Length: 189
Image (cartoon, rainbow, N blue to C red; front, side, top):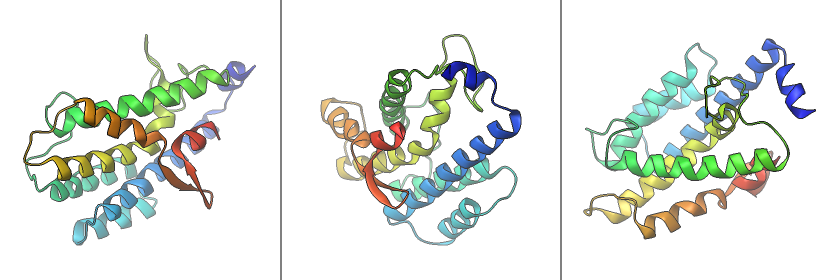
């Protein structure tokens, strides 16, 4: 029944759901930047982009956020690339943690994670899980930045300590609809 409802969702509703998802992600990127103590023109530009309604909002917010992220890390050479080492490896691991929780929750309530609202359905891909996790990526980004700031000058790597640190991301409390709840609770909502 739920899978049938996913298939019959009109394109207009898919678009509205995706826009709400992107709005949440962009606001969370702004909040992560503020939580990390970022200030200045880049943060103000991120605020304007995150709270605005211009075309290419997600791309603009991402460009600004990663610039702020690099500044917070004091690493102007940082670029977000999935296959690069260093902070990127930590980010990838954190995203995998969030993905596993999202996937578990979708399957637990009987929702087919292969049919998303925006991510393209591919063989052995879970498009809806990728869609649902988008607003939570900035939580991982913030947590990774905090980790790197704490572990410098050591090189950032996925070790047992980092894994324990990162698995807490889904238990951390965030504000959702005016209440302080865990990420897991928000995913289940």
